[in-house]
Picture 1 (cartoon, rainbow, N blue to C red):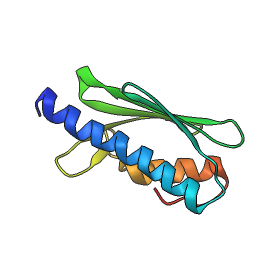
Picture 2: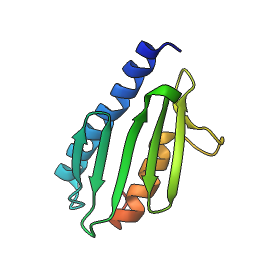
Picture 3: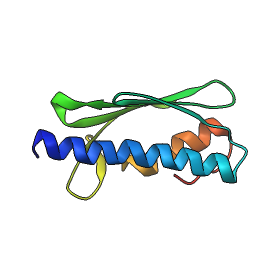
Picture 4: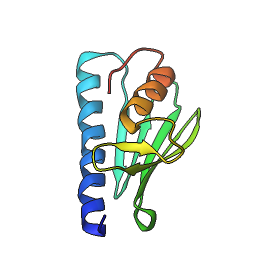
Length: 107
């Protein structure tokens, strides 16, 4: 994958996270504050816990840090998959964010 292709896919991922947070704030009482600075989004939950998602451009990866740990994802042509083969980005984000919000969210 070229740098340009990576950036297109990675920016689409970040935008999807932002839109999902907006939607979830409209349909739930989760009150997720999402702040984007460049290639990083910080999600802050009501209990002040955070999930940080950031681009790792030299590696063509997206990293996520949650209370459950740190995870690395690489685009496989269809989805962002864990580099250790243990999950897909949005499924993992949904699981970790739901745990931190104390309710099922649906990213």
